[in-house]
Length: 121
Image (cartoon, rainbow, N blue to C red):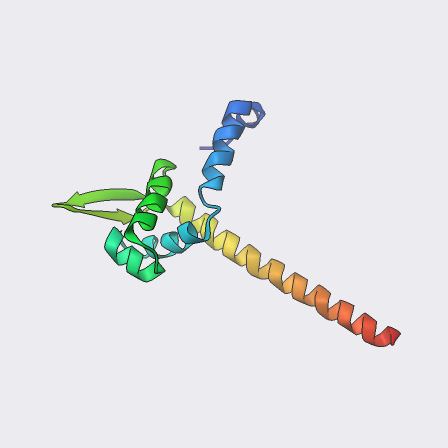
């Protein structure tokens, strides 16, 4: 589905889009997605991996689920969560690569700045 100019010009659409993007703007949720993109987990397993309480993990999973980033399935009393979304995986890889490039640019600028200061001294 392609986003049209009409959708972006709609304030309600922009608001919903901003809320959906904000759902990813949390280090714990990013950490959870890292695991969920590899395989499915129950809350207990995720809580151990991200070293957070089960209540905290459940809260974050509910947000990710509500915004359509993850899915879940019941197996008896257990609920298993997973991210089966190629678009999300592409987005996460893109953002990680972009962050690495950005950090390298910052490091390069810092090196250039240090070199200039040394030349001026």
